[in-house]
Length: 136
Image 1 (cartoon, rainbow, N blue to C red):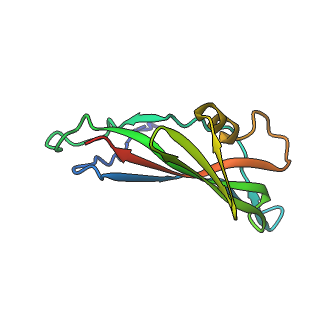
Image 2 (tube, rainbow, N blue to C red):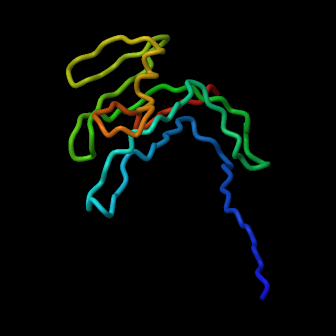
């Protein structure tokens, strides 16, 4: 008996890069054994600067740099409970919007929203949607 092991990969390449790039992090997963969605609070270190490398050979400006300009953060322990806040870059500083409260924060404070470093299920504040703006 012979076996043929063929590895195949599917790949998408970007031909035209957007001016605003929105990235959605998977923070919720349906758990069959629980019959409900649970929050995935694992740590995702997202950069303040981003360069995309998955562009096609004929892409216009394939070395385009992006800067993080906003983060939507989910605060809470699950998809059906919690709260959303937004962190937005304005000129050279960051603003945290929490309902009617707006406060200025340091860029280093964004690290607090990367997620948890362990699998402990607890209340967490995790970056959920990232917005990057092209420098061009």
